[in-house]
Length: 227
Image 1 (cartoon, rainbow, N blue to C red):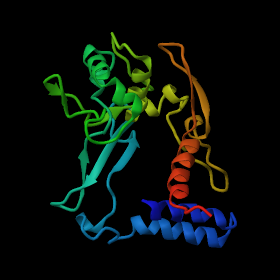
Image 2 (image 1 turned 120 degrees about the horizontal axis):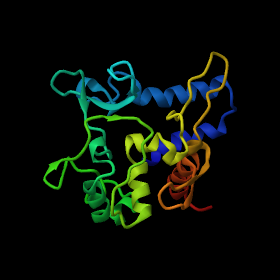
Image 3 (image 1 turned 90 degrees about the vertical axis):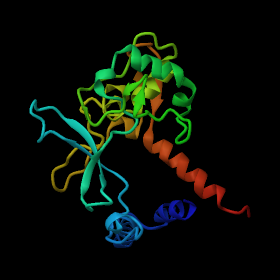
């Protein structure tokens, strides 16, 4: 992890834009996109999961978020569940509220793995995690949720909740498609925004680039011996 962080950090020492920067960035990218990048994985692929946001396959002309993994049997992409996202039918239900209330501390802490808030395949004796989710600009909620911060973080971490007014991403796109020669626009969630909670009235500041910078700094600086 530290070596990986240092490779990204080293890009900052190169002039931008420049051919040297492009070459260094391509080398980092190829280390996980090239064939054979992960010899022990299916097809030698380092791809852990492919996530899509598409409308072409929807009979109702709605944007659908899905996820795929490389099958160890066929070597082809096969559909998997959308992590951290319950089936959309659970939105605004008592079941979702119970899940949030029972896991509030871990949901707010956003602790990955183990006994964390990871949405389970089943909850309350029935299938719970979604196989896909339609993006209707929904905010997740449920009757009787006791902690508004837990509701917010649970909604934020779903596939569709992140791409919604929950993060001031009102057109659902984190990176807006661009015309040739023009610059792509990033969503307010990425660059920094203040969001007013529709249900509690609380205001929260979101800045995903800032968060990523903090995470990278903690890795790089922690590995640098004091002078």
